[in-house]
Length: 113
Length: 116
Image 1: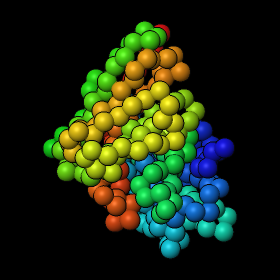
Image 2: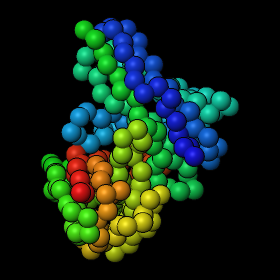
Image 3: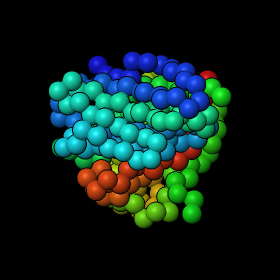
Image 4: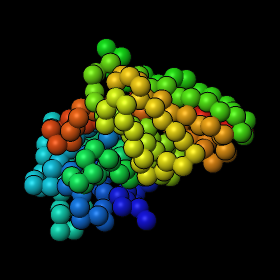
């Protein structure tokens, strides 16, 4: 049973508009959440994270929102740029398990110019 | 600064052959990890290490062994390769309590392994 789910395999957005990527989790022990970005033939690179004590974290064009009651988080990219086209992975960790991350299956984002 | 380096980048094996994937990091990280990524699935943790000389099982450890003889290196071994082990393998590293301190895992560029 997947503990971290990204239900949208792909998303297409026009340049300049907002991209919203969603992630749901089932394990209530998760207390730290991360987004990674991956280009073809490269490894994932860290994008942004959020602790369960917060409901929002912002870094430039990227904002992550966490809704603990719904066990849902989302990544907002505003404005979207063609260089943002990549696979985005949501990941979660439970404090009890330290650094062991559980990843979602990923969402392919295509930003059209 | 190379970060996390994986060798080789590509390999084709026959069923039953053995091989070792090498991961090296130059960031003086305590923790190192091996993941596999399969189509339609996220990265799954195979084994990890919290320091030199230590290893532990992750989510999908069967068929793999690991060793961490030096702090900067983490080796993943396949003793008898099976077609089900065809995958892309990623190595990562992080500081000791990486997530608690907000320090994420840093990944290599992967090894694409095909087993015929």
